[in-house]
Image 1 (tube, helix red, strand yellow):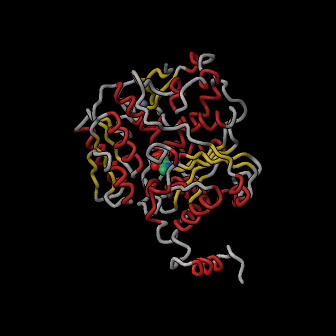
Image 2 (cartoon, rainbow, N blue to C red):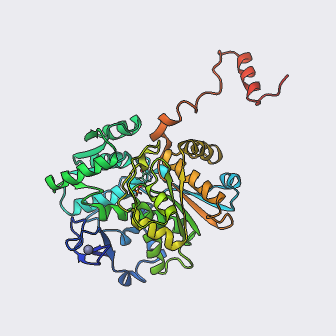
Image 3 (spheres, rainbow, N blue to C red):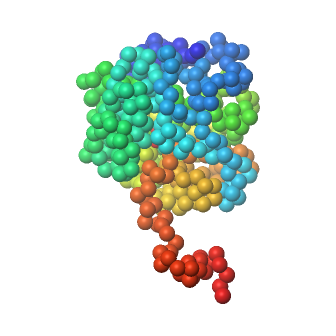
Amino acid sequence: MSFAIGLICRECGETYPSEARYSCDFCFGPLEVAYDLEAAKGVVTRASIEAGPLSMWRYAALLPDPGEAPVDLGAGWTPLRRATRLAEVLGVKELWLKDDTRNPTGSFKDRVVSVALSSARRLGFTTAACASTGNLATSVAAHAAFIGWPSVTIIPSDLERSKIAMTAIFGGTVLGVEGNYDDVNRLCVELVAEHPDWAFANVNLRPYYAEGSKTLAFEIAEQLGWRAPRQVVVPIASGSQLTKVAKGFNQLFELGLIEGDAPILYGAQATGCSPVATAFAEGADVVTPQRPNTIARSLAIGNPADGPYVLDEVRSGGGDIGSVSDDEILECIALLASTEGVFAETAGGVTIASLRQMIRRGTIDPNESIVAIISGHGLKTLDVIADTATVTATISPSLAAAEDALRVSQLVAAS
Ligand SMILES: *Cc1c(COP(=O)(O)O)cnc(C)c1O
Ligand SMILES: [Zn+2]
C-alpha cells in the first residue's frame, strides 16, 4: 500500500489529486508526489521493507500507487559494492559503487520508467512515450513491450548506434530528431498537447517518473545496514535524479528508518554540457542553457528542468559539482573497469572523474564514506572506447608468437 496522497506544487504548495498533471494551474511550477509520512510512521519499518520483494518495489509504500500491480521488468535492487581498489587509487577510505549498470536495460532509467508506467497504467493510459537522450527511450520501449503497449520514443537522430539499436529492437516507434535533446524536449511538449492520451514518461507523467530515483537512496541506505553515507556523487542530466536521491534520504530520516546527518550531495557533469556546474561555480541562482558538445550523450541536456533545485540541494548541504573533459571521462571509464571490474557508459566516467576532481580540490572528504552512482552500462557507449580498448597484440596461431607477445606485455619473463 502506498502512502502517496496526491501531487503538490514545488513552488507554491498548491495540492492536486494523483492524476496525470505535471504543472501547477496557479503558478506553472512543477508538481511532485506528496506523502502522508505521519501515517507511514511505525507502519513502514525496516522489517516491513525487508519482508518485501527483492526489487525496488520493496519500497512501494514510499512510491506512487502502482494500481493492481507494478510494471516490473526487474528494475532496481542493484548491488552496492565496496570499491577498495579504486578507493586506494583515489586516496579515499571508504568508497562504494551503486552499480546501476545492472538494470534490465542497463541504466538507472528502468527505475523511473517502472514507476512512470505503473502510474500511467493506473491512470488509464495505453501508449508510452518519452523525450530522451537515449537510455530513457530504451527503457520506455522495453517496458512498453513487456506490457504490450505501443511506444513512441523521441531521441536526437545522431545518438550512439548501440542506444538506437537497443531502443528499436523492442518494436516501438522511434523518431530520430535532427537536433539536440533540448529540441527533442520542446517537440515533446508540443506533442503532449496534441496527444494528451499518451503517457510521456518524463513530461506529463514526470511527477511519478521522478519518484523512481528515490529508490537509489532507499537501497543505498538499506544496503549499508540502514545508515546514510556521508557523501554521494550523482550524475546530472535534467537534475531529477539528484533532487530525488535527496528526497529519498530525507524520507528515511523523517520515518526514523535511518539516523544521523543527511548525506552531502555532489553533482557530476561533463564540461561539454555543464550548465549546472557552471551556475554552481559562479554562485548563480539561474542556470544559463548551454549547447551540448560532449561524448556523455546521456547527460547532454543543455537546459535542465531541475537545475535550480539541484543548486539549492547541493548548496544547502555544502556539496560541490564536478565538470570534467571528454578525455577525463574516457580515462575514468578505463580506471573504473580496470580497478573494479565494472564497465560503465560515459555517464559513469563523468561520475568517477568528477569524484576524483572534487577529492583533489578538497571538497570531498577522503576520510568519510562516499557512494558513487554508476548509472549506465558501458555497452551502451561502445563507440567511444572501441578504438582504444582493443587486442593487446594480433598474432599467428603459434606458441612462439604467443610467447613473444606475452614477453612484450611482460607476462612472461624475458629469456
Ligand atoms: C538520465 C540519466 C542520468 C540522470 O538523469 P537526470 O535527468 O538528471 O535524472 C544519469 N545517468 C544516466 C546514464 C542517464 O541515462
Ligand atoms: Zn504552484
